[in-house]
Image 1 (cartoon, rainbow over the protein chains, first blue to last red):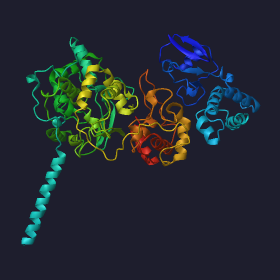
Image 2 (image 1 turned 180 degrees about the vertical axis):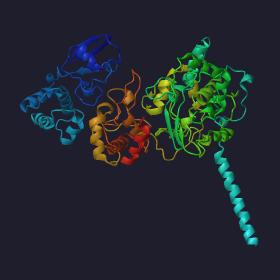
Image 3 (image 1 turned 120 degrees about the horizontal axis):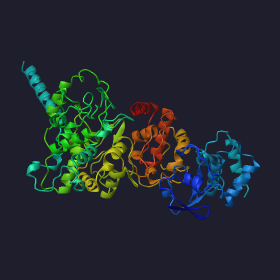
Image 4 (image 1 turned 45 degrees about the vertical axis):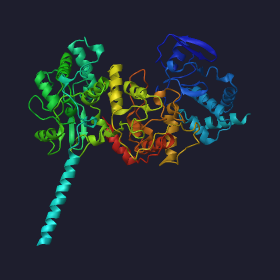
Length: 151
Length: 449
């Protein structure tokens, strides 16, 4: 039995320690807002926060999470920067099909937490690993700047 | 006339000196000569036996003991084609002299070793001669296996014969002339195969002797980690100073503090051998990861400790090109680089932020698993960067619960892989590499199965 703290709550999952966090979130805890994409940490759709850092949950074994708190797309709006990013996303209608957007929002929020006013190179460095097949990149960039400006 | 005679005499003296130097270089010492004289025949050794299986398996069946010894000798790595049946052969070895295919060593009578007696098998492992009298190429490390005790060779054969025979003919070798003349290997053996069994040194500890047997006879570590001379024999004057296998650098594992393992703790070396990873020292990839998965991870804890004890005795060999490993993490920000921008820096950074940073982090300390931490790894501190580029090309496949790295050979061009390798060595290592697309093309050719 594994125990993790997700979105402020202690959760138990009857899985082996090498089960990826994403499997636990979606299949055991029913938190299906986080999506599965490539399964090898190359597309970014499964991004969650672990101790505030953006992490690809598809490769992170639950046994490696330890005491660190996990935050998913379901709860990111409760954080100031998460709320700002979500509002900017709606204001600029960033989303096309939406599949990658949970990961985009988690990565963008982590960026603002570390760099409150990011420039293009900061956005590239933080967001390049989050792919979007609809090509919303231009609006993702705009929305991050929009959120950063909305102090 | 005296002038000409003097000239001739001078030329002759120069030839003799040159010949002497060549002979000196071409005839390196044996693997354990560094440890000094005083070795005694196994039968005359009073301590606990350094050969055979560890105490845990003392009462096990012949086949079970053979399995342990077969794994310790890592027969499977070479005698198995990619994705093929273990021990059924077929793996290609691309050498400067042509291409060799590992034979089938399952007990199939027609295509394997099913017709081989104990005596045949002993002759192959100790003398490098097949059952049909053909000389074997020294790609088969019989200059190491010659040290294996007779009883252990028989146990290995018993284990191989306990497996299901597999009908699998190996492709014919494609060696260039004159290397296709197998009888020539007789001369090679004359000079480079001692044809002597392991002889312990009573003045060393039993643990040291057990480690020597595991490292030299079964593990044949020198076959990758010792440089070779012109005759492809192990240059034991620079024992364990490093070699190249399939493009991968087998690093210096002497006791040199900068280039080798001199400043690793015993526990760090043991950890690396057992799992292919040591926190703060990096992870194994390529052929070493394979050696760990198929062989070293199966050894008893006591045997790993014995190997460490023996490795501690290897004389340091310095390497001036090898800078000390950088142990400090890189900056947590993408903006800061300690080293000057490497070749193709903009492209390298673009690659890194897109494909690498989510696991390896800007600091080089992974958020996912310490196995993916690059800080302190020899590979990123090697200005040749071959192992970095090869890890990107072919990935690192490790059994669960370890995590694997995907292969990027088909995703990125040679120029892109060169750029990201240079970026990685500049960001996390002591000295930036300067790989070109051409360098990566060569490595790509070697990494293709």
